[in-house]
Image 1 (cartoon, helix red, strand yellow):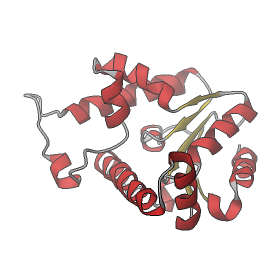
Image 2 (cartoon, rainbow, N blue to C red):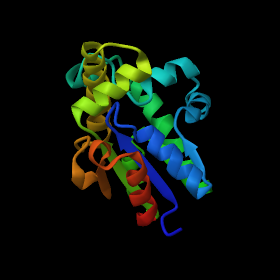
Image 3 (cartoon, rainbow, N blue to C red):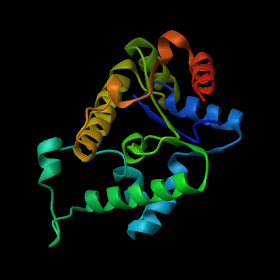
Length: 194
């Protein structure tokens, strides 16, 4: 395998997590998503529950409030501490093994490595809405609200910590529309790039 690490950034409802898990399975390598939370909690000293909510998503207040949230005497907010712990954990994992890492700004954190394939999975609104309705047992309006909220919070976190624009093609090696290609073809394309 030429590239040792695959990062999967994704829009909510696009199936990016599922695609990443299947790629890892087919390659016989680890997939890190929610299972990375315990490691980040240990590194930061914060509870796993707090990490689950804050490690990838910004506070609901938006970028301006995010930049000026409560800071300690060193000028760090709790979100900064979480991000630094997350960064350390991702760097250690990347040194140790080939793997797939879902979200968590891993594409940016590992940007200086040559053995990384950065993928962004997006989709069309109707397909994402239908998938969220099915998975979360909500109506279309609730699904669209969930997508808007989660994607906005992912974008705010990403834009704040990376100084790049979340979802912009130039930040990734590969961008795939799972609605047009389907999950299986997305997996095959990623595997072909490896």
